Image (tube, rainbow, N blue to C red; front, top):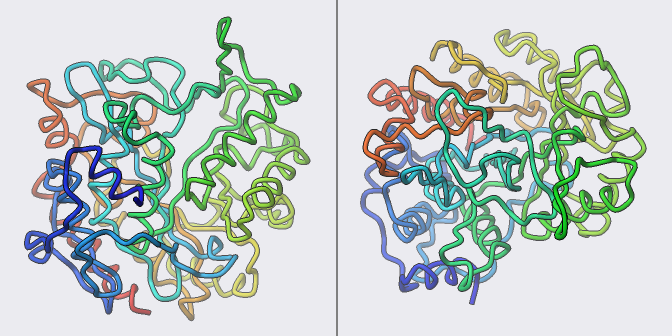
Length: 437
């Protein structure tokens, strides 16, 4: 039994799928590419997992409706260097988790529910979902906290399995965490998306859990710790992920440390070079994409490290700057810098018009679609958040916005409402004109 059907069975659902008329009423179409837009996330998150799978099936990128989810799902194929020109969209799967009372859980299930509203990949380049959280966060994992209380997603535990915020542990005896991730990846690939996850490399932001003792701080010079980091990431790639976003990657090996804002030692250049090489080698995946937080003009440094692209080098508001940079790097198929619509440090306050301009420049500023630069977006760039929070706040803290202690109230109040719906429609209208290129 494939993992998607196993997920359905574990939720006491049958595996027979039906065409979803709600999806048809809300779909946007670009050639064979289909997705849902002109919505607010609450409309997706309140649906069941089975309804979400039926929605993805109704949007099938090859036009075939499957009465049972197919066994063999292939990732969209854009060759080994797809990551150099992809659009990366980070979804904070903790923020959209089920907030029930003080508990936070099932963020992966919520992300599955959001998949139908993510624009699929274009003819010439891929869209890739990046999950914000995989591993347990150091403090308060599995709980939401007061809006002003730090509960950072940037501090992780290794050797402790996966986050209580993310995995559905109520069904863990029926479908393992590994299988839940595999089901998510199959559903994303079926929708025409690639997938990845965020990782941190600052030593003091990583704890190693010991079975017979207290947690200890990660040490890059400790061989056991080093191998734990490497093997944990190989394990995730073997579940179907194809991209890793590396926080603070610009500073690997002590580069530009005057602007380093992480906490603790970073791996040496040679250590990170080895990690990236070994992940590719041991998984047998030559097409993996490694994305670095921040880039600079020293492109050879990042290319030799094994990265595909990096953020924050180009002015995203200037169409001509983006286009000229794309032209300059059109033959750089191993590494080129990318365009940021926004990043995980976004403090809010940017107008809808500026966000739309940045998305426009990210997906239109090139001579030929195959020459575009990579771009980086956050969940907020597709689905605007409520006025009094922002992307970075939700990375640093984990508040529930429920007014009655229910998950539905949190989902309804986390995002902007009528204006968010209209903005989401305008984003879709931009993508409609690119996905068939």
